[in-house]
Amino acid sequence: MKRVGIIHPWMPQYRTTFFANLSAELRRHEIELHVFYGDTPKEWKERNDSSQPLSMLKLPTRFIQVGNRTLSYKNLSQVRRSGPYDLLVVEQAIRNIETYELLARRGIYDRIAYWGHGRTYTAPKSKFEEGLKVLLTKNADWFFGYTQGGVEAMVKNGYSHSKTTVVQNSIDSQSLRDDLQSITPEQIDAFRLRHDLTHDTALYIGGIDEAKRIPFLLDAAERVYDRNRNFRLVIVGEGSLAKTIRDKSTTNPWVVHLGSLFGAEKALALTSARVLAIPGRVGLVAVDSLVAGKPIITTRWPFHAPEFEYLKHDHTMLASADDLDCYADTLHGAFSDDGLVERLSRNCRNDGIAFTAESMAIRFTEGIVNALSN
Image (cartoon, rainbow, N blue to C red; front, side, top):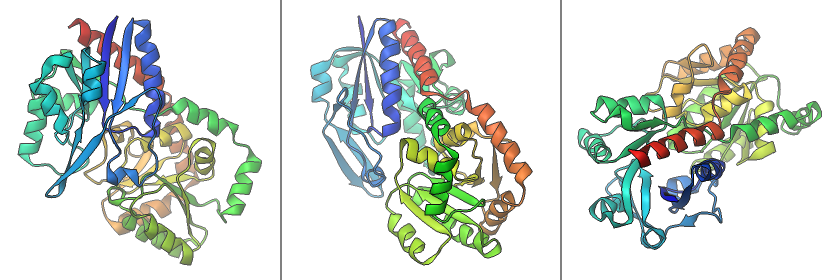
């Protein structure tokens, strides 16, 4: 039986179903999977959405600050004891110091693969940093890209297209669909009454931190409320800027902070809103939007995550100019046009069918099988 190891940077809750599906798919091909993961970085830990599955091994992790960059080193002793592996899959990131150790000491794997964005989407990077990422990836035996755009970026930089897989990054959308379908009208009415919500309710869901442009969102929402006293903004999530949200909600009736919600509670919040308001980084929330039929109102910000590719302007979302007044106008306008929101919602649900953790696991399995036979 072939053996594959995956070292994931940390273990967010949304990844656990994917790994369970991937393990089951690989067993059908007589491939054994071991998953390792590191500690949650500080900037993500405050989101309170990490998991510690008993079926996976957590690696001791050190975080090292170098200037404005945080490097990570995961102790590989458990990986060595569990090896060797026919294929080892690691994150495509230059911040992981243990990756360089793996490249220098190939004793625990026959082949190595990278899994990542393909290019840097979410922050400005120097030519050196981007060049180093490309150089590392070119030395890999396979590349698993989150999206088509990431794979195309690597191919453009000289990586062989025949050694790539588009995994189509997703959440456990089937569980979300089941939770959405279980919500009753009575539950929605009670939820809206409890939080003083109206027909004109927008939902923010995600991390409460700088990458999501929370101050920008609050300023825009306040401008919408000044024009429409029925407007409400529900914020679901935790993070480093949660206190900013809590302070705002104590003196403003239009903003409601519910903290982190999962499962049926998350589905209830989604069902009770008309649109998602996310002016900053749009990532996997794109799948939430498509599955729930809640179009995202965002901006043409240059640092959206790869999953932003799943959305199309004026088809499944609206993207204003990257300007506070323009964003407030677009968000306000969405509540003034029921036909527009209904059309976007239908398109979201239709497009959302393609994104599941199950199909992601099948794609990843096909890539692993090909990488092992390459």
